[in-house]
Amino acid sequence: MTTLIATFALSIGNALHPAWPLYLKAALALHIASGMVAFICAPVALMTAKGGRTHRAWGKVYFWAMAVVAASALFLSILLPILFLALVAVFSFYAAFAGYRVLSLKDLPRGGHAGLTDWAAALITFVSSASLAAFGAVRPHMLSGLPRGVPVVLGCIGMLLGGRSIFIFLRPPPEKQFWWFEHMSGMIASYIAAVTAFSVVNLGPHFGNAWWVWLWPAIVGVPGIRVWKSAYRKKFSARQKVAAAAAG
Image (cartoon, rainbow, N blue to C red; front, side, top):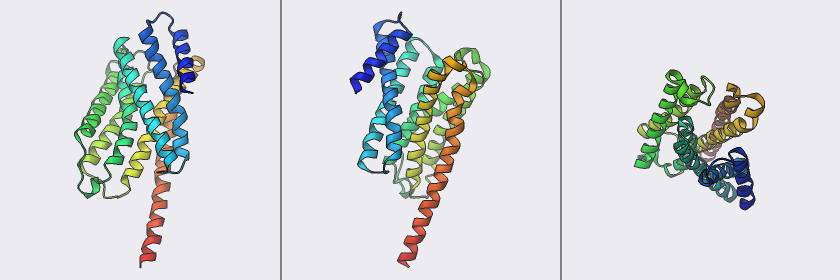
């Protein structure tokens, strides 16, 4: 299956940019193939039992696929060069990174500390996202390819992602299950970024470079995350009450 996806992606790369040298075509093919893998894996991980073997296996594949998506995007953005691709790649991957890393930070409410890698990733994401928003507001011509206003919105989302992590590192939440919400929120947010890329590539040719082509996944997905978190908080609260009553 992986070979078929890679072959299909490379054929798309050749068709889109026939004049590119082979290494750029290969990077684009890798980017497309890993994006397709992530796009397929995420729904499976989300729909299977949380914490189960299937969920963990597909979740890991999704995470590393997103890592390849980000790395190949950074590679292409440097060589082409495309500034906004680099800036967007950073915060898009950070959502998955933060969601994955929080599984190793469950002890924060009990005196644990975030590592140097966690701090560095959060700070880099915040700074690069602030740069994206600033360029979009002051120097939009430097971000050719993005509709006006979209860089500001995307930059603010990235700043919220990085800023929230920094806040949690400084003031760990007392809630023992905080990692559950941060894990799922980060993974879903990263999938929103993947859907955004899918939307731009597939809807853009038909509807042009309209702002909603870039932002509809966030408009739908961000409130969806809030609803999901509220539902699970009620579910966990009900379980705790039943457990307390049983203990009493």
